[in-house]
Length: 324
Ligand SMILES: NC(=O)C1=CN([C@@H]2O[C@H](COP(=O)(O)OP(=O)(O)OC[C@H]3O[C@@H](n4cnc5c(N)ncnc54)[C@H](OP(=O)(O)O)[C@@H]3O)[C@@H](O)[C@H]2O)C=CC1
Ligand SMILES: CCCCCCCCCCCCCCCC(=O)[C@@H](N)CO
Image (cartoon, rainbow, N blue to C red; front, side, top):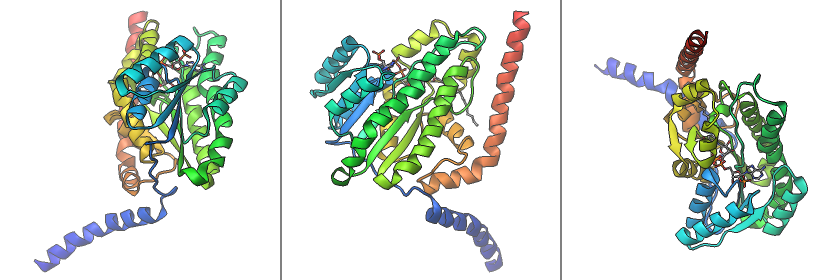
């Protein structure tokens, strides 16, 4: 009897040892990012996910600034947040593609504690159909625009860190920034680009107590999605449906919770958690528990990923047969 018990206990040793090892080695170290009474600056904060983030940050007592192009949409957002949270948000009209305009807005807004780079455009189309100007537009707004924003905000964020506690830079990617999807050559490239930017940037700013997050939402009900759906290839919709759809409020809540807990990778739904584990790669991981799950589930999730690809390529084949 005692021998059997000892046998079962010894089975527990390897996972416990692994957990302990991961606990010791995970970097960067865990961190909490407070939101209350801090300056949260959100790009694309006048609509959809960004607007939902602005609402939530304001209702949690943050000082909120939002930046986007249309002044009308900005004022509408400001009034809506005033009405629901009773709080005044600062608004800045600028195109993220225009570095000088972005710099002016950042200077006027004052030192930022939490920068949420959320602006984005998405036009789903086969590359063969898509004009190069549109490809450039998507890359410019989603990727170069994020560089502009971070370049403009970083010096001020660094300078003010000592007296203001940990800072955060969060980037709004997409599940199409974790796996390439039919119709999203330009969009996926722009969102995969954010990941490279984020991984490299985290190493550069860790010494300044600034912590980077990447948010990966599935399809989310926003004005942007309504527009996108008007001319989306059928296959894009079929493949994206593998991960269902969320409401902007739900995505904003996941994003804000993830930012506050200092997570580098922030998935938003169950499929997103699987996808994040399957694509963990060499990204930083602050949670030893998540690191444990990543190590243990890697093989089985590779199989799951291959099953998804099998299913998607099946849809693509069927679609080609029907077309001809
Ligand atoms: N909705 C979805 O299904 C998903 C969205 N995402 C990502 O989430 C983010 C937000 O998307 P969503 O809320 O749906 O988008 P919306 O289209 O609803 O809102 C986009 C926001 O970005 C602003 N914006 C667009 N272009 C620029 C620009 N050049 N300069 C400054 N601001 C700009 C818009 O304001 P204005 O036009 O006035 O400039 C608006 O405030 C995007 O990065 C998107 O890629 C990720 C996964 C799924
Ligand atoms: C190993 C397990 C895998 C788990 C399931 C994977 C499902 C992936 C589906 C990807 C959907 C991409 C939607 C992009 C939405 C978006 O960004 C656009 N609406 C434009 O904004």
